[in-house]
Length: 238
Ligand SMILES: [Zn+2]
Image (cartoon, rainbow, N blue to C red; front, side, top):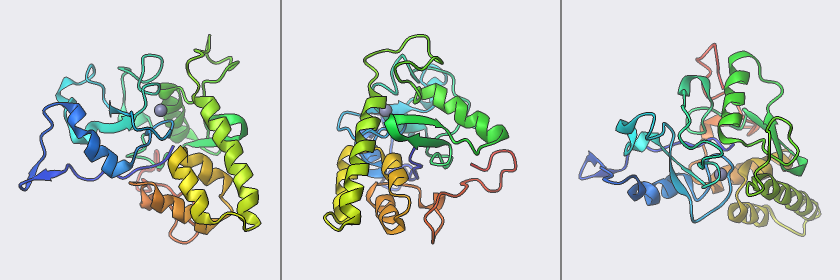
């Protein structure tokens, strides 16, 4: 899950912009973090304003910029996050944590909690995985029944295969790093491209720059490997 840096609330005449309807924040959010679902990372021109704390949980945050992300209808839908109760202190979110460290992406479109996490970090990553249902795929015994309309796993599977196929062309010089990044931008799934190309530091740097709002503080300045976002926290530095 790509970590993002939310900007401060956009300004109008030196004042915080007031969104009379939350949907009016969409263009500002797209400018900030791009046309990507904050959770499953799909590229879409049809994203919804996602209330991190749902309107049901706290109506006062309905039009609050700091409470907004962008999400697809599936991640934000009734099967997944919808109006579930969120506790920011015990869950990982892409605008607060280095969520690239929370999860591991695998061939076949699978997502799991990063097996090297421990303690509160592990629990927070697990809570977020369940909240948005990123590990749903047909046959996962963890879920009683797979909703066949939930094809997020299959989009990841296809993109993983494409990224691997293009990697051979990249390494043999038939495709440039800019070609790869252009494909990635149009497909989304930052984390999959980052995972497949993790040996190519320069390309990872281009990915970080090309996806708007990627939290650059979440990456080591030289190796471009993900680093803790909250190192001051003893309990959960992720
Ligand atoms: Zn999504």
